[in-house]
Image (tube, rainbow over all chains, first blue to last red; front, top):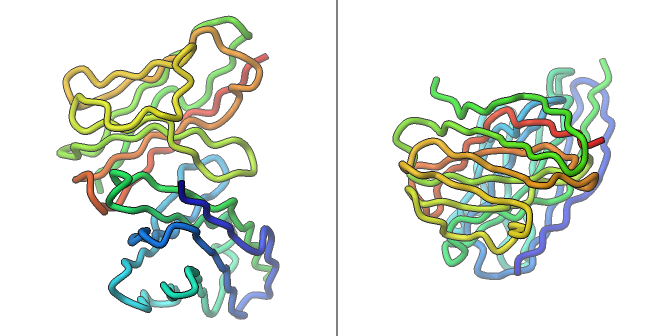
Length: 113
Length: 114
């Protein structure tokens, strides 16, 4: 089955700096890659997603890039703010798996004011 | 904005007791998922429904866990008997369709087994 690795497990940045979180996946058939933000005591909230037919997608301060050849994708957050502090999860799925998401282990992002 | 509803938000029980969690997906969403999230880890799928039918329950410990979605709308996840290792966050998610569609998560139920 699919295996998703996520790095780093913790990331501390200064407010205003950029943050980058990287994920690799094992199943070349995976074609959908969402990113979720999870705040303490809450469920994961979708922040951005990308499908395998595009290489990059941007939404204001958040961008995701996908390299299908290398089987890795990354989340980029620019101009970080204290409210960006949370745990971020990447995930991957294939249509063959009935939309089942396989999640990475998570990255705890801390933005210091 | 429509949201996935879950209850209870917190549950404390003793081992060997039975517990049940309820989920109401976003209106119109045909696909419903139950995930388990152990502290410090990513969610792991337990069971997936398409309408009232189970699509995938390969990771559901069927000796103690059961899930149903009788009318194809809300769903119940049950654990009987609960074990210490079942302490985790139980998350429900829903999506409009089954193939390549965005999954929206509820707030989860935090289970503590003593």
